[in-house]
Image (cartoon, rainbow, N blue to C red):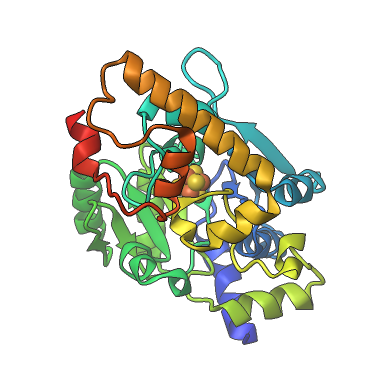
Length: 295
Ligand code: SF4
């Protein structure tokens, strides 16, 4: 980790600071610890928010709760009822999968609209991130944002999903953020170019051990059973068998609901355990997404 990288991240935060302060997306993982410390070092105004997903590891919940400067938010529906992973599965009639990650948009991505959000997104996390994220990312109203970018003379790229990304820390990018953030989802990613070692060097230097799960060998902190975690879910369900049981019980209810709605006809799933095994990639009597959609 070079002092220049740290300084650059601090400068980015200062450059894009909005008058009402940042909304800092705090997940309880190491990257979010970095951005919180960086925001403090930069002296920018911010509120750190953590979204309760209802499938966070208990260690993560305790770790987040131990920090008085983090606000914990529950996802609520239009009637003020809490949205949980469990009621989302029943509503969508299928488990969340890599291709159908309906839970993220409901549990994690609703917050921060109309604010400039600081995230801990890094290119090193995946090749997809490399394509889809920059120092600044603006989602929503693609035609308007591109028109504004042209007028301002900002250098931008458009992602496949129509988001606009910028990698310059200059006045044009700052003006873009100023003009767009109230009507779009605007994210500033100060550590976009950090690699894992940068993150750990930085945290060690500032005396932050981060989430205790890292000391238990976890490389990634996220929802228990997240389909993106692939085979790591086996480790998670061995550590948290109660969550496995809840998933199976909810899949049982989901099958019942499919039956009530007349959507069960061709499925080979008979029990919640069948669904769980399919979901974990163990059941090769494959049901495809097409099967699910047709029913
Ligand atoms: S399980 Fe994965 S996809 Fe779903 S909310 Fe959690 S992180 Fe997002």
